[in-house]
Image 1: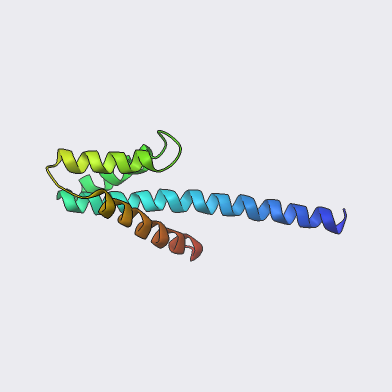
Image 2: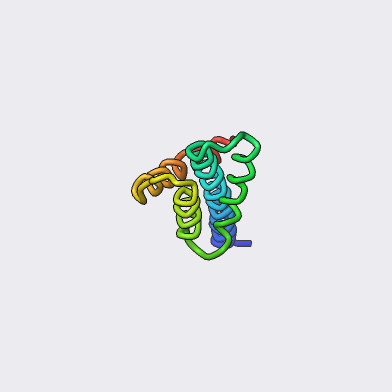
Length: 107
């Protein structure tokens, strides 16, 4: 094997690891977002965990994060809460940053 082949394998391994970490970070972000939303809706601890799992699963409906945003926004509306799109999206960004840090730190 040449040095070029070794470098190529190294880049492929790093790319695969980065993709795996990003997948985990997005799932963690969605869980944190779900727990935040559950708290705002006044759900019990057990219900909050179940709701957070539902938010994580909602992300598999279609590519991107719109399905997660839509679920949270609809659930807030159904609960009679008025939460702006901006607040939800800010929380999504905030929790994405927290989740990436947690994943990088092995939490």
